[in-house]
Length: 327
Image (cartoon, rainbow, N blue to C red):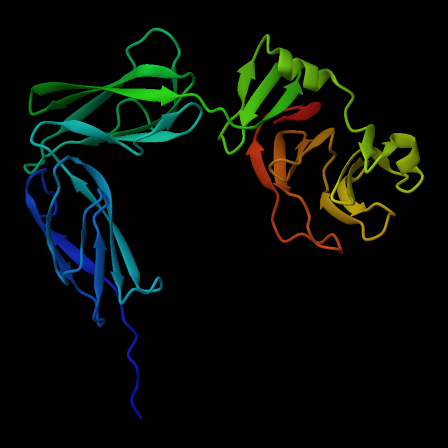
């Protein structure tokens, strides 16, 4: 009998703190395999067992080694490439508003000098909001609040008495995606689909019209107009409803439910009080509010109304009373 030894995928690299333009040697420590596929995070690749690679630009890159072409035999490590002059990298190359990005200082410091950092957003207008870390740490997370052709982000580095001011600008585009609208006591909000936060809005005629409209008390579906009173005969605790895919999603005194139109197979989605809800048929989602947040999940697809996904929090707006989809 011959036992098949499990392949363990691993690698190291040297030097530990490489600089742009300096050759980096990747040592393959895998315990088996015959084929090697390397990607170096900047578009470069190799099929050598233990390749040498040179990064042209400083930054933080994900290096991936795949053995024998199998997705189960993969090892990913992050490598930071420095420059002799302090600089910083960004977590992405394409920037849109209301998405989180992390900026990381790249300071080559082989002698272990004490370093101080100061991140600067030099414009007086509020075009970026800090979301993680402080402005005196080696990394900073933020999101941009409006589109700009040149959004400046600066970093001042002091090391061993020498000061370097690194200036970069980033092109930030708008996000013209579908969105969900909310209203609470503080005002109206818009959140782009797949966006990470709700943005306050004013004088938005489209949003106001949708939020002012009659909500979840009447709906025409398959040529029939359903009213709250009609469905309350089937669902006595019903407070509001939306119909989609032959199912009724309804707010009740004990939370949020989904059931077949004839009242069969009721399944509870939410146990907290639900003051507002909407359905987005374009993106196949239901959104609903509880006291301190707004949640969502894909619409139910099974005949017995069981769902396999877990409701997710999309934001932490408090006291939302109206929700509408804007496609």
